[in-house]
Length: 336
Image 1 (cartoon, rainbow, N blue to C red):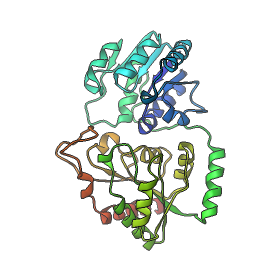
Image 2: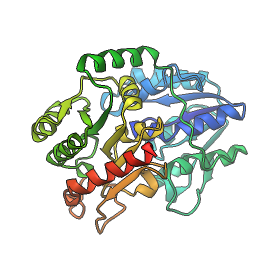
Image 3: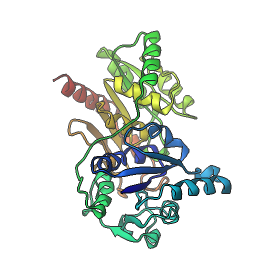
């Protein structure tokens, strides 16, 4: 039997779908995955995945690219297509793949509820709040697989990336360090860079150096953290997505908001301090009971609107001393 996973983006959401891939593998299913280019590096060469199909990104959509992806999806000859995104675009890909069964979430659990009409089978996860990982795993019940609670994240071998990261850390003279990641997708979920700088100063006072990681278009944001740190933080060298995974594995702790870098750190077992506002950590947060969550809860919570007059600015209510204390608690747990 063969399953086609349709989870196109974003980084954190693809990470939260990896346990589905692991469960399918362990139950003897062959797999293919349809994904957009940004998250593709997490799946390229993934030992748990049989076929990788690249879908055109929404911002770079071309008819030729769509036709190519559709040909590959149909060539996969999946017995079941799993729409793990709950959007019209993901539902459309799943339906057009030619799979005999098209399985997705029921209306209530979809980002775009009316897209459920394209599903041949609809699954209702357990009553909310439920972590998004378990929501994804609930789709497997339609295939006779019960995997709720599973937290396994198969990733490709990163030997080359790890060696390069080790070389560059050696050039910086860094052994033990923390990662501060100030960037991410939604402006309303981000914490002020000046507060990250204050955390870096506090960690330095306790003997721990910090690296400020950044993604495309976030270099100026990283520089603001470094400038606010009074020399306590260093801007990290540029990393690919796969290099970031290797780097996160070497960090003592990662401090980040509800963003892809935080979810990747949690997936590889790095201690995490997660900063939350409009979104719900019970649904999206780190899943280790030892990880720390610092949150300010707006009246609209949980809210998944990128811009909202109710929750805009709520992250400013989180104090640097509060995050520093959480980081120290998390480091103490690891030491114990």
